[in-house]
Image 1: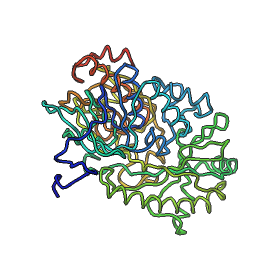
Image 2: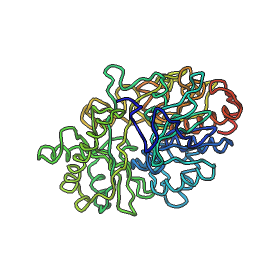
Image 3: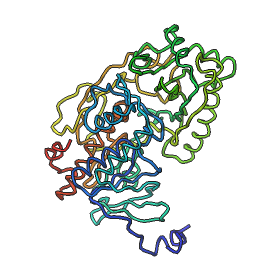
Image 4: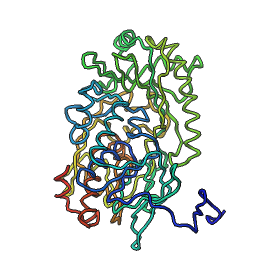
Length: 461
């Protein structure tokens, strides 16, 4: 079918001029943690900024996807992350621990407040389906579709915070995807919240059976005083349940990402969908169906086998399936895990990231191999993750050769092993904030993103 045969109401896609929904200094594509941080930073610099998001809320995986755990010690959080979690903590919406569990609903409300104060224009429920280029071939707008129809949003600078590098892909910038030897990607996840827990009974079982859980105190943390509860394990119970036909073969452990004792609820991060490509619509559809089947079986197991969960029930399920790993754009620098370990002083450093990780292929981070949580999984069964602090160079935010486009979030330029450090929320906020400030300074000064004055950018960070 030719585009001349496609209509949107009375509008012919090929023959009629598309409406312009707005013109901005900076377009932020994607409203997850990275996108929100980028839009707030750009707005604060003084650039006319819009945020374009495909769903009807902000926060992405952290909120709509229910990944309500910030994987950095509270006392080490800086920048926009500190602003956000300080506000949440004052409302009993964040726990000040070695990790930071948070109330995702309160987080959404506060993100909207930050965006409003920064003067950001929102395009929610809006899908990006292409890019517009100027006479030099540089992206200067995006093609969008929403309830108002199809149209163009124009921008002097664009930040690709889509997670899947959709804007960069549409613009033709090269990318890498998956593990280098087989191109397999990390598994997809559907998180959900359960209620009806007997938290005291649950905690007692965990304490009485330490050999059945991860030895890493950040993966199996029981701190009733602060309220920080995170549990990876139940290895023996899972094997017993599999033998009894309750669970599927690829389930090797039960994982509580965060628990709120005063509410009797917990976030479950056990579902794993392997061999799925988060840039393939059919793979996503199949993954969603498989995930709900796994969820049903996980709940049957939890109620039948785990002390304290006998009367548990599902409170909510993520609106988004969690996609950890898709396109990584090739930038002016491709960051490696060796770079992260060496941690040199980069002349173009735009911030730090601090988080706990297991290094090397032993700790490749949610391995695509399908053995997460099994006896072969060094990260879950044996490792004690290190607190890694490293600088982030500005060059990994610039697609190679780009003049008007920047990257933020999990689609920044890095290799597979470095990606496990750079895809998580703390790094997403850092790269988002830097991209937002840099795009604004670039747009307002008329310089390309490659030639922007980083001293001016750092003044806003």
